[in-house]
Length: 141
Image (cartoon, rainbow, N blue to C red; front, side, top):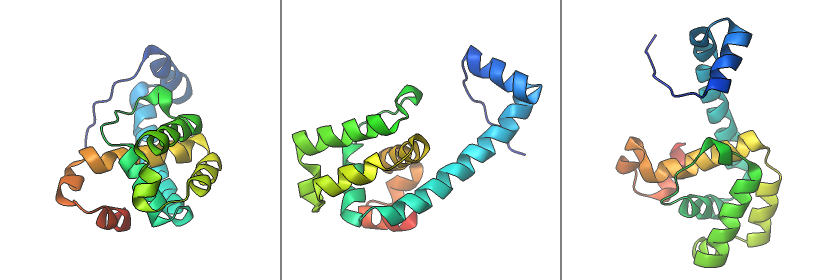
């Protein structure tokens, strides 16, 4: 199995040791589960949002560095509201603001986090450097 070096805080280390006996055993369970959960969530979310809404969400995450403490639906709603008010991203892509807000509010924190990671990845991932068109990115992932 390939090795991954992750950074965790002391509380997370304690939690892994309590529930899995060792942090390695916990990491070997949690990381694959998180990746699978991410891809399932993105697959379902993309069916909920219109392409114009997904483009607005991607645009709103340009130059954004995500932090674990912001992994919440409320943060995504704030990020999108700000991008719509300041940069009018919903108008740029033809999304209806009320529909976009309503759909975001219906997401749980895990779904919202997956959507934020996916949107931010368009701008920073190795794969995205090969995929320059948002339509292609939306269709591929």
